Length: 146
Ligand SMILES: [Zn+2]
Image 1: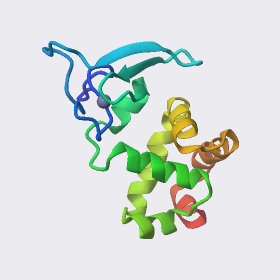
Image 2 (image 1 turned 135 degrees about the vertical axis):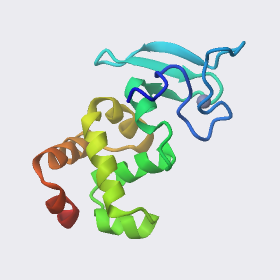
Image 3 (image 1 turned 90 degrees about the horizontal axis):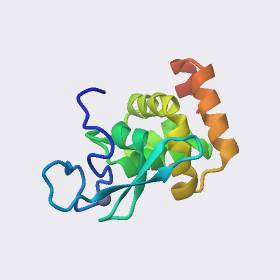
């Protein structure tokens, strides 16, 4: 991820007027630090849109073609039991793309959980099941079973 700007350098919310604006050289910076998560991950807040984010949520979604909200919503629906094939049809994403998000998300599970639970009302048990599923199953099995 070395091509990415450091987290805390920009707002990762694509709906924000200050989305992706690097802090360097701005007279009025829109990103501020706002404490740490329970796991000790630095949390940031954008003063413009008031969204909070952590190190991982920032870098994970920056410069992806699909807006972060869409990716998170898809992950939330998967956690709630939707099948990848149905989501692919309903939302128009390729199944492979969804699988890729899922695998990437599982690697950053800890920092995504906060967002998924707070903003998308996903339950802890559903998330645990989702991550366990990604870690335990092969790709083919995953796309066929969910
Ligand atoms: Zn913002």
